Image 1: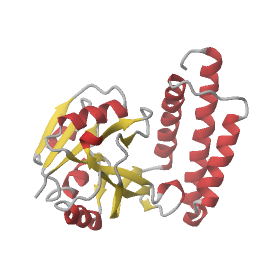
Image 2: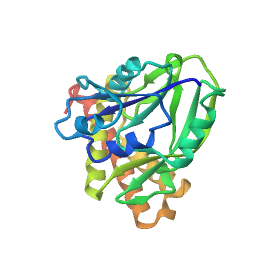
Image 3: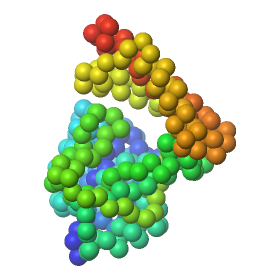
Image 4: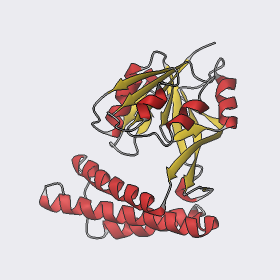
Length: 254
């Protein structure tokens, strides 16, 4: 049967890494963890599993994941974040196609958990991700945030049943802090890519981001949690483009 390498990047992930590692036992044939010099119990937890643990300086999400791909022994790769785990149905789906692989890669639906609750709508579900693929048929590209694996040769992509479970945040403040961090990184990445923002850009992205996630993608169906998620999401877009506009005008990073 063809073999699969799981690749995971970590930094201080002791809260969730064991769930991640436990969920892929019996599904993958190798686990590669690339760690950015964690100071918590991440390494000790990984040693409980059959993990190849590599420490490497973090220089960006995209770059770290591409480095991790190069450490994999097998060309078929399952790429996970440390706070993600396979659902039982997804485990079954991966095992079912392992020896009858038909595509260059496979999309997986990611289900996000907000403060202990699984979210069913907005940008948070199905949140399609390309996470199972031939490593030699592409790379993680675009920006060094919300990085995506991009197929380089136009191969067809299939879709697996089951969910990739993601513990996005434990508290509302953690979510706000995370989105603030992403807006700062995103603005810098857009600036490096030569993207411009005019005076209206931040507000247009705020309005469209909220309408798309809360109204058109059904965020309102998740009640109060949906309102918070979509509002913070839209504000992060607003702040990202405001910061980008500052960079465009001043030519320096803040």
